[in-house]
Length: 493
Ligand code: ME8
Image (cartoon, rainbow, N blue to C red; front, side):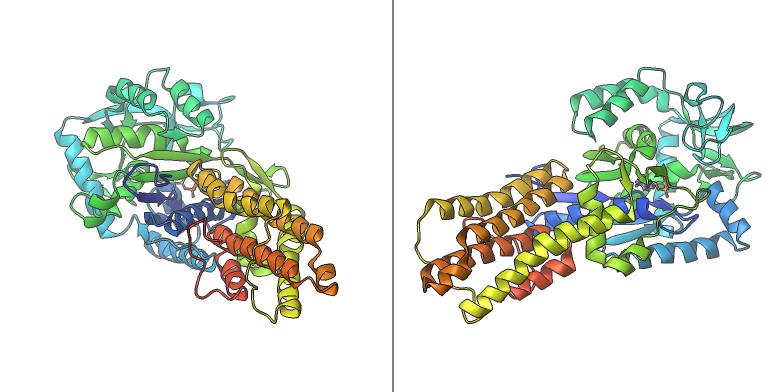
């Protein structure tokens, strides 16, 4: 089975680079953990994997947040970006790099691409007046407004008119529609691909890509006009290749365009419309896929500062353990759909699935191996009963199910398939009752049973390792296996 999905065995995955205007919350943690889980699965089966995250540090929103906290923009983003990086370390994130848009290596690539597109004639100087939403950091088309307000921020946009530079995005509308039709896998799940195509049914406007320095200085200067800085989205999207050392870097040669960008639905448009047209205009191949997930609410409401219900990931991982937190995020949200967070639901899953189903299976199995088999996993023996065959088939089919679920971008399905195996192993123990077999002296039955269940647990450790690296390494070692869980041939029994 080909799981890197492009035939090269390479898998490059990115999170959005989050705005450094506030500390990380549940939504940021979800995308970052999700990408981590995907990266770890791909590494597990040997794909050449690269995982990038980072911080978006320019623009009005950040300049204003810095002003409000009485710091210089640079000092402010240094502080917040560090808090993000510390959070990712605590959440066990295995990113290969962390890009900051204030780094010289990023700024140089942004300027290079601006110049390239300018020289090709797709950036022009013009005047524009429109409804500007500060939250979105972009001009909104009239048809996007709901009751005169931004649908995402609920605020009334301000009318702004000024001279600026524009990217001829409209020129690429037909190309983009054709591209999306020829590459149905480029934007998924299907509902989001449909949203993009339906947006593209109306004329696409050119994109304003500059801000006059008289209004905003916190940005990357345009290489062809020092009176302007680059619009934050045009700056930020380029992180996905600047981090690889575009155009000559070894990483760029190796991983572009084998890229999957993961975002929530809020930033579908910049990723599905601005970014591919920018790439096309600069003569760079388009990324392989955009994968869009839903939104987390809290107790059925939108998470927001004003409601005071912002969930901080470290509060939960400190209280329940990092692996339980990662497990809950992946297990609870169906990729593409919205989900609601509540601490009660978290505790319920934790008790039912991790403590009861998995924890009990392990404890019982280790206890019996200790008591009936001198603490060593017994040899399988040659019993050939129907119940045994059925169970072994169950164990051996689970790795392929998990692999399929991951290649379908269904990490929840991967977790549930493994959880089903755990439940089947608990039932198998009940059915086989090795404790009564031991009493009647049937050691062959005891050995076969405990061997089979230990194998199911060994596979569980491997298959849930990307989700719970710490706990699954402990499980693996409790079964007497050295090092970390490693993928193996599923036929090995
Ligand atoms: O948009 N549920 O940054 P941002 C799920 N800097 N995911 C959520 C979420 C929620 N309630 N809230 C946030 C930006 N996210 C730009 C990106 S990329 C070139 C530039 C996650 O800090 C989700 O991944 O607003 C969403 O797309 C992202 O945070 C938005 O982060």
